[in-house]
Length: 600
Image (cartoon, rainbow, N blue to C red; front, side):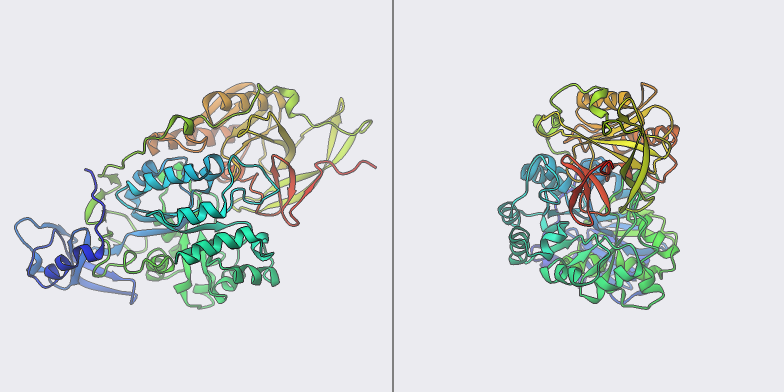
């Protein structure tokens, strides 16, 4: 089945009126369902939904007068009719899939609208890469709205990216048909300090009448936060506790609370609604980052809604947070987010609001999934050859590239070490005493080595440091060209030789994730498009991803979704310590610090 783009409301207004008044038959009629009205937070029994031209004409107790010989009838048989789910903030690239394959993966889970920020590909391929993602997104049978990336690099001066996004790029993209606003403004110090480039991007977005996405990754809720809000970001998904959610909502922002593959920030923040009793209209559910394994095996926005309900949220409130709240935030309340006249006919049939089984999914008036099976084509963009050749290391690497020399004569050193925090994006700034052998600092016990290999400009440079928390044992290495947000090649390992093998392997295959143990490759996920995505089916990528996670466990790692932790170790806008191609970054001060403390 191929899809037809949904016509605008004015294009079909006459048909909507004719069907609603019974003068014209509907294309599709859903009969006898429980209407979940997210505007009034009600469930109304025994209602019908009449659909024409991909939009809802009416929702009434009896739409028999809207039927004709060619009207398709779907019998809800008392099931709940809920709006298609919306993901208010996410990155398609984190699924390791192209927009087409991501859509194919999430459609059976009831996600019919996505608000995606392709800043991952922007760091690799610049504005051209954003345009490719935007164009494939518009080809899909569900609604994929694109936010123009704001921060590439995410923190100027702290990292080197393949391309930089300028205020002129932002202004140009605001005229594209699928652009809904500005992607997350990660350079929060830039906004707080009134950086002219950041303010120019925000101005271009607001002048276009579109929404500015936020990203305030700091626990400081004082003047710095006040300055950030004053700068214009309208939402934020970086909160990790109840106070964060409350502060954002009180200041007129939407608090986006996320459940991704590794981010478990719903339970700690939804208490602002469930216990403090605050107005839920300004809280939105999202995923941020979900890899293919989560999408295939656990779900997408249906998983987030179920989790919110398990955390004590009223099911109808949870649904509002994943439908109408999101639509309203982006100025799309008259297009999506509810089952009301004129809106796109994005409907889910489910037999239970709490466990939320996704039984039938309708998008733009077409049945697109039944009982977990996608029934619609998701067209692919013709990705050019240069988008599949983006790993440029510049040389063959060897063990010597992954060593850290100790000060002359030292038997031990004090190292600044990145500390991984399970299920959260922030890291900890740790210090460890590490031994020295033959003049080289040794990773030992809890501490592994981390390296960032420059892969955009073929400089051959390798930045080395240390990381703790993965629990790796024995000679091993894991390398990935997914390294938010600069997307150089990030390598974590206990042995320099294995680290070189892993890095060279990714250079040879054009990007992805690979794990070596005792000198042997034990897992490989090929991500040929920008070193970030595969255009293979989600199930195939998920199977390789599962093998990769099993390989991590075989190397001693027991962290939940440790791959996501690995991929974020270069994200130099989230405290406390990160690695970049320029050195070890203390994100609390946005300063470079030495890997080894000065030798006394």
